[in-house]
Length: 399
Image (spheres, rainbow, N blue to C red):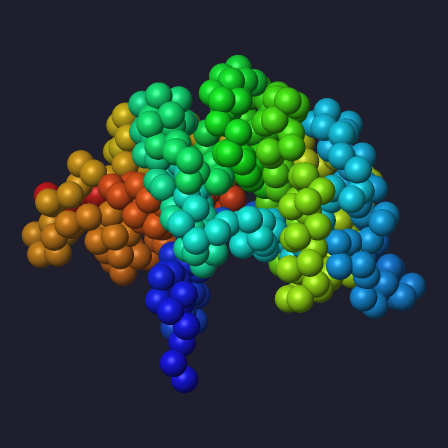
């Protein structure tokens, strides 16, 4: 079969490919520490599983409304109002099979051929590919370590033009770990107010994972005057360790939400009914367990920062949120492993680290920032200590 020309534009997900490679090596009996895939190692809380199980026994196994059950949508609007100080009606909410599907649907429903989408780098791997599928043009806005990988407003203004349809904003950031402050979001909003053609897609999936007293804020909260131009996307995968349940939600202007529901109705229809029940339990419960998880993430983050701080001096910032380190390996380019294998770029570094020392991390090139690698610290303390020791041992053989 001859595939569509659209498929020729897009690349496989780098993180998915790496995870598959790590699983393959493990299946072959290799000792692999997998720090590439962005997934909590905690199980879904027991009370969520029990609620979903009981709901299924009670008949929650049928189709629901395409946009989600009324009960879940009500819980979502309540959450947004209480936690984020944003007011939405139920008709401004759509539930989907994960935040990823909803971001795709939003872009597909709104982009016309040649429309541009500004994507700050480093970025989550799927953003530019989704834009391409929708026949848009991803405009990569490079951000640097010195500015904690946050948007330079001067550079932003330089790339905005009449064709700009969206700006994608991800805070806490994957892979950067950067968290935008209230003042930074306010300053951004004051720039965007002058460009009414620019909509803002806020990917808030790591909302609950914020460290060191930093506070999470979302743009619709800070700049309610822009709310008709903002799509707020969130979900349950990262905060509640529910990656496999595939449940997310989006809140925005009713016209866009209606279009997303129409598209979803002709593709996946409703998100998993049992998953929606699980999401109700997650939102309805006391959130104390999240504080316990956050303490564990903080310990794990600090293990990596302390273990690799000397080897990669001034090459990364301590993550403010999410569960990734994004580390520069540019200083290693040109060196050889055991005098044989030359490291020409970040991909070579990650490939050799996996092959020689069994540690899987993701090249920064996959996130639009060559010369770096992403390490996920949502793993056990023992695995992180072992992995960091292997990385340091690997570095000793580079010269």
